[in-house]
Amino acid sequence: MRRWVQAVDKGWIAACCGLALPIAVSAALVPFRSSFALPASALVLVLVVVAVGSFGSRFAGVLAALSAAAWFDFFLTKPYETFNITYRPDLQTEISLLVVGLAITEIAARSRGHREDASEEANNVALIHNFTELVAAGEPAQFVVGRAAAELTSLLGLKDCRFETEMSDRHPTRIEHFGVVTLGGLRWGANRTGLPGREVELIVQYRGKTFGRFVMAPTPGSPVSSDRLLVAAFIADQVGAALSDRETSA
Image 1 (spheres, rainbow, N blue to C red):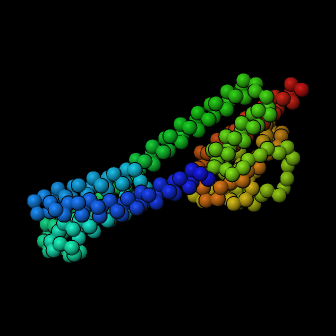
Image 2 (image 1 turned 180 degrees about the vertical axis):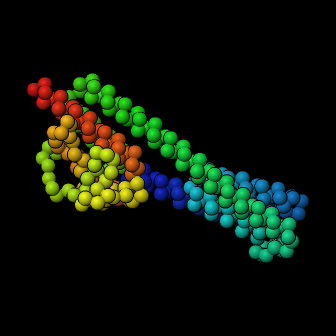
Image 3 (image 1 turned 90 degrees about the vertical axis):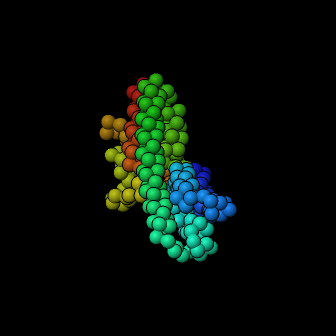
């Protein structure tokens, strides 16, 4: 929940910067507009859009590009302090500023998305490796269950996660072992809308035997990728292996 709030706050800050920074930079260039070439002023504003698009969201970058074009027109093209443009070259410069700003914003957003995907994939692989080693090392089943609950809470952005040995038919919402969320037997798009706003269960099985389930309280509206759901199912399988080993040892 805290990470979601931080992301929302960061998004609003970036959006405000996207609106305000072009105004401030355009106003700062006003004393130099008679001696500073208009294309050079446009390049300065492009840098502002690049900065906002690189560190903010796609939405913030688009706001910055639109704001830069508008205030470039208002402060730096004749007639000044109006949203009219008299000269064709000035109009072409403004259109170029807008198009380049939007293009750079899209490129930055796609690049940021690829980096985030690569980072999440690396984290998931590390989690799978660490959990496999934990079970292979013969750690006590109780410790494995507690560690699994903590990892699931972090992985899926849960408010709460607990393990129960008794099964119940009161939880129709379930994470299946092939990484899909079902609600009343129907598939739920968790990658877009997040887990349903009710308790979700993840069955712990191993070699056809059921040992219990994790009952999870999701954070509403927090999207969960299919890769994370697959990792969650893998963790449940490893917990089942640990519990099976305990029964065999006993």
